[in-house]
Length: 213
View (cartoon, rainbow, N blue to C red):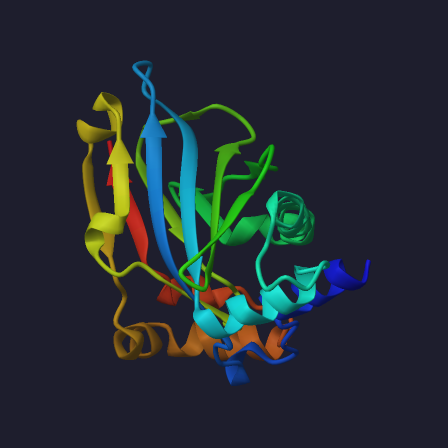
């Protein structure tokens, strides 16, 4: 329980005021959105590479035999801790279909490795119900608390996979923060004062893959 609480606190920050939050953990991410021949989204495959400082903290906390590395069992425990801790936060994954949020299912496993002094996490999530490629869909990874900064180094790290999704129009959207604030100033202010601890307007700033079919 100690390790679960530590990782949950570290990953999510539990910042009481999102407007005052700033990143403490940095992740380079890759997201692949897979489709089948029936025109459905089948799964979203994630690769997360954590920064060296956070990775060193994880090493110290999960290295039970103090050999300065993470063995197979320690990595498995870390992966299960992440899978459990991030469940209530939907694994930082957001899917929308014509503006409506699409629930996701819990991944079967989160695979973790430790390479070049960095923690890497590999896992796939699926929509809870069949999701057909129709209308406007968006796919993104972000932390609503802003405690974890999740970055896609290049547009090529947001990848549509499969003939069905390839036939749709798709683009990577990287919102300009100044434009978002200017265009949504009243909405952001109202949302914060109505519910300062539960506001989820940070999604407006998140990099995402938009697909129109």
